[in-house]
Amino acid sequence: MKKLKRVLAVLISALLVAAMFAGCSNGEDKKPEEEKVRVAILQYMPHASLDNCTEGVEKALDAAGITHTSQIGNSGSADTDCQSYAAKMAVSDYDMIIAVATPAAISAFSAVKSASANIPVVFCAVSDPVEAKIVDSLETPGGNCTGTADAFDIKGQVALIKQLQPDIEKLGVLYTTSEANSISQIRTLEAECKAAGIELVAQGITDANELASASASLIPKVDAITNLTDNNVVDNMGVFLPQAEKAKIPVYGSEIEQVKKGCFASASLDYVALGEQTGKMAVDILNGAKAAETPVLTVMDSFTVINTDVAKKLGITIPDSLKDAETVTTAAE
Image (cartoon, rainbow, N blue to C red):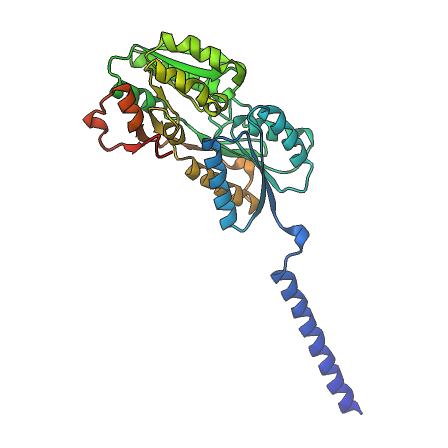
């Protein structure tokens, strides 16, 4: 009888141990649905540069197996849309908001702060996050917010314009007066133009509805126009590109997608790569890194791209110094 009791005791112990390990194994191998990491992506508006950023972000998140959903503001109401989307994201069951472009980043940052939500904001393609007041500094962001800055190579752009138009005297630029990144870039562009002996003629707009009249006023005054990373201007290039083409005034884009759509040339950034770097930064923060202590990553490397169709229309010969530049055609787009 005692022997039987001992055997039963051993069997019961063995079963309890097996159950314990089975429970541990199930808990490790199968994470409850409610614990899955969820990320919201907020893109300011639909245009090629920002689409490329989001594509890169999603690529990095997919590689890490992170669930994500996206919201994109409409071109005509992007500011209002982003504020509304951001407010909902801040109080929803998201672990992070990734904001693409400066206005989206400002909306997300403000929404999270207003809702007292303890979720990080990671931004992509914000040219001057300090100017936008979403970080204290590039080295130490300070709040629960960090990301990547697309430092448009303005010096390289001015140098490229001088190579293609050695006799240029006046360079025009259209910009939105409420976009923090544009205000910052105007100051840099003005300094680079002065150093190159070029007069900068800046024409501000408050919204896209003013673009047609603003460009009609600007084009007769200048020898060329350059774009910044201004979302209103880039999203509505179809308004002023035909005007400039008719007047034989070259328009220089701020990245390759604009050149494909009819701008003449650009010192361009790779926005898919920028988005992917942003996504990887987001993954690191989701894995435990602190946004407040993660320095803003500034991407400055650019490459030259020229639209050969536009060059022919303008009657501009590409100099030998640019023979290795990447070329695209409007027809291919």
